[in-house]
Image (tube, rainbow, N blue to C red; front, top):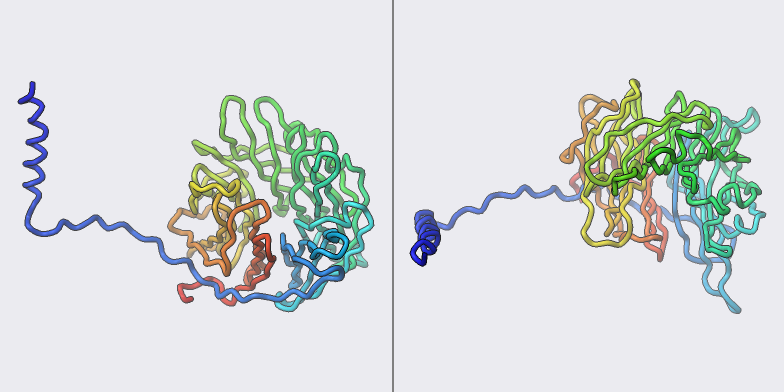
Length: 422
C-alpha cells in the first residue's frame, strides 16, 4: 500500500521534470480591457435657484426640440434656530450649456418639500401651449416615513405648479413605489407598483393623473407578482418594462407590457436568464424598442422589433462583490446611432456605450460584451441611496448628472463618440 501511494507522487515529479527545458515557461496571455473611453467632460455651472442657499441635488434631465431641462432639489445650509426645509429646483437651457432657474410655484405641503426625481417634456400640449413639462417629486414623511409624491407641470420656461392630489392617489395603505413620467402624443404615463402589483398613472394633459391598478394583465395575478418600472411611447402605444416574482422561483424575471391607451394592458414575455433578471429602462430604437436591466451577474440588453417578439441581444458590465446598494440600470439613451447606458454595479456607478455598427439603428442588432466600452466618469460616484448618476441626450449631445451626496454637478461631453484620448 505504501508503494502504491508513492506512484502518483513519482509520476508528478517525472512530468514536472519533463516540462523543464531550462527556459522560463511563458504565462498564458490574458486579454486586458481597454481603458475607459473619454468624452472630454466639461462641467457646467448652474445658477442658484430662488430660495435659501444649500447643497444642490441633481436627479434627472431631458431635452425636447433643443431645450434642455435639469431637475432636483436644494437642501439648505443650517440656519440660526434650526435647518431650513428642502425645496424643489429646476433649470432650463436653450443650448445645453447656459442654464437658468425655472420658477416653481408649489402650494401643497409635501410639494414645497419635494426633490424632483423625474422630468419629461413634449406630450400633446394645447394650441396655446404646444409643449408642456411634467415633473415628479417626492419627500419622505408622515407617520410611516413613506415617500409623499407630488407632480408638477407648466410651460418650458415656467412657472411650474404642483397638482393637488389625495394621498391615496400615489400612496396610502396600498402605495408602494412611483417611478418616472413619460410623454406620448396623447398624454402622459407614470409606471409604478402597488400592493396589488404593477400600476400606471395616466393623464391627458399632464395635470390630474388617474390610477390604473386593477388591470389583470398589469397587476399581480396567477403565479406572478409584478412591478412596472419604466415607460416609453413606441409610436403606436405605451411600452412599460419591469419585472416579476414567480412562484417557485427565487430570482425575479424580466417582463413587459403594451397598451394603446394606458388603461388596458397586454403582458409580453421576455427571454429569462437563469438567475435574476429585470428590465429597468426602455427607449425607442429604430423601428422597435431597446431595454436594459440587471441580468445574472451583470447587465443585459433586450430588444423588441415590430413583430412584437422580445429577444436577448447582449450584455455589458459585471456586478461587484462589494455591496453598496442594489444594482440597477439608471438610464438608457440613443446617441450617435449607438446606445449609452448608466448603471450601478453595487459598488460604483458607471457609464457604458456601444456603437450600432454598420447596420445602423435596428432593434435586431447584437450587443455582445465586446461591443460595449466603458466611459470615463468626470468624478467617481460610489453606489448608495443618494449617490446617483444619470444622463440625457438629444441624439448628438450628452449631458451627465453626478451626485455623491455632497454635491450635485452637471457635465457636458465635448466629443461623442468618446475616444481613447484623455
